[in-house]
Length: 229
Image (cartoon, rainbow, N blue to C red):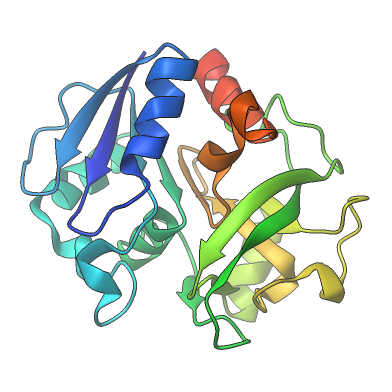
């Protein structure tokens, strides 16, 4: 499996992602610089976390205009698999590859903490190996992670089984108190209708190395590697 990790000016989780995918999970990984238009025949493209272009204007809004993104969008529209984490999720919504938008946290503060999320579906290659209802401890680090969508979009996401994760407590209960940023319906991640584009605010790459004392995030990478076509 060949995985491309896109690097924008301001990306700061790119090498964390590369380390997990290459060193820990033994996959071929290539760096995709934002100015290139070559996706190098990758099976999966990852948009990592960070502060692309300094998060000016809106998080992900300028990165969406990078040369590489034209090819990423075409790749996704042809059925190619794309994963966006944190800032990468923001870029995917700005690119209209995923529904909704990521607004400022309702606290108006940057949040960096461990956070429990629970999978909502096994109907994607990204979550197929995960346990629905189980609480996974995945770190978050964002200032604009407040997922918003209008009622019509929310209904479509729910009806089509496109919700990947919701914020929860340590027992898997989805409650207002377990919502760190005000996201509507506690949504922490979604997929598109064709289930080949995935976005999530929490950082599974920061919870995939036993040296860090937490491997809850590795199941999602292992799942996509096992089931990718």
